[in-house]
Image 1 (spheres, one colour):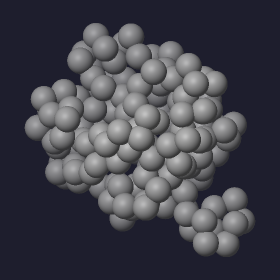
Image 2: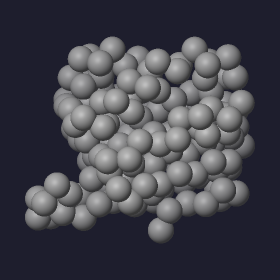
Image 3: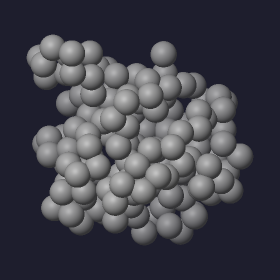
Image 4: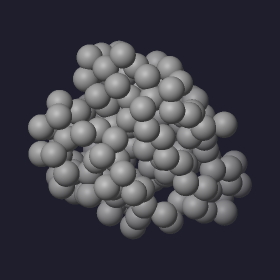
Length: 154
């Protein structure tokens, strides 16, 4: 079940594209935009992460940190970030624990038996660790409402 507004954001520690551990707690005091996406190098995910990349200046003006999360390996996420010039952290949730704690996972994703991918979801977490915005899509082909996310962070 997805988190709702007003919930305490579950803590996590995942590895980034350099395989360094990163935790939600390191952004304490800042607004965090958590962007869970199903998979690197897929069309909709590429459009989504590039849209957040292109909006970084707006997020920076309100001291908000964008963090991407996928179930892909740090190696795939690094290649994806490099190809798309994504400069915000992309974390690897290879055990699916963070994805399940937030928006959930798609079972048998893309018709692959046993493969679980994060549901496309966006959460805004305030500096105190409380979820102030939550959006989860059951359809992996739907992009988030970017304007809503911007308003939630502003």
